[in-house]
Length: 550
Image (cartoon, rainbow, N blue to C red):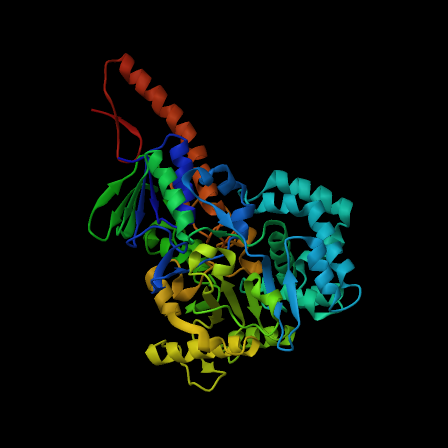
């Protein structure tokens, strides 16, 4: 009987399993798919000569994460690579805003958009220098992050207090207009805000856009050498060297609860796996509450709150094998960036977000475009490019803002039509792009969910990033921590604080909570076993992890 079962071999599940194994626990990880990794996988499915990242690709939060850093994954063969520039946002007139890893280079580029914008960028960087480390610390510690929050509050008071707090909750359009005269700085902030499901007018989108911009400048947007799967491989190897077990093709369908405690899990094949100490669930929150855990074991208030749970936008992704570099009108500033944002100005970002809010398929989708060979030369033959782009679409389509009559069934016709629309968007900024496409792969929302059940209808963030579902509102009001209403069961997915991104924090928080909760139990077991041994009795661990005699 393992001490712990981890449901799901995504990055959070694997981080949790590693930390438990480090503490001496026996751990089994059960993964529904035929390979581990969740949304951190790569393959050669587009073209045999090209490595493609199937889901996530660039990892600024992984680079900033002290959790992953302490795992020493370089000892397992993980190496990081960077593109010459972090990201670019070209405009159709050939101008291009570029985020560099050196603030002076970023600032000088923004000065070309409007006099004074270099100083404006330096001002935002100065704020990061004062409070950035405490923000990162608060992100990657269990909620509430008391010590890091206290330090952050003290520094906020010293650095401007309420004015900085105001900046963090501003919509990114308003923050960008207050700080910059030209489009360049505004687009860097707004494009980064749209890495989440935050419209330019959404409260808090300014703080998120600033955070991602500063992380990109400080850490870059690195990629694992050889493909995203290299990160997963390193986590699996580390776990296995410590005695952990990863079993793929094992879909968990039930968490068995007795007397209010998680005591086992049951797989789709009918196997019951009992646990001695804890179950950690790296699964989407709606899949845990009411599906894996039967409703009768949960408070009625939690079930009612789950009916109000909000997913982030659905995702549509296309992977390409390109025969040559992308022919950007902006030239080298765009060609040297690992990530490229494609929208022709702030108003187009707002228009895109408004169409999503109205449940319309966007006619000019905002694209996050990845140039993977630019970031890591091992991804495709010299002179070629392994590329991808993703955008967002409504979960439930009410209409098509374009001319293709897309209804959201995402059958073969609709998938091809929307992939063509995405390529047309690239063509606006890189005429001739379609002529260098050797092969492409389409990943519609339904496809993404089939490949990873946590990506419900293509939602990649395990729930909205909006303020009403963050901190102590995540995943539902009054939570924010990995503990659940079921004793011995912990939420270890991005549905828990601090949310999406590859950084391992939800998994680490869940592992620490399990270890912390087990300490009194271990002491009680030790005392009970000693007493029984003194009486000549034999101590046996029961199905609920409690001693019994026999």
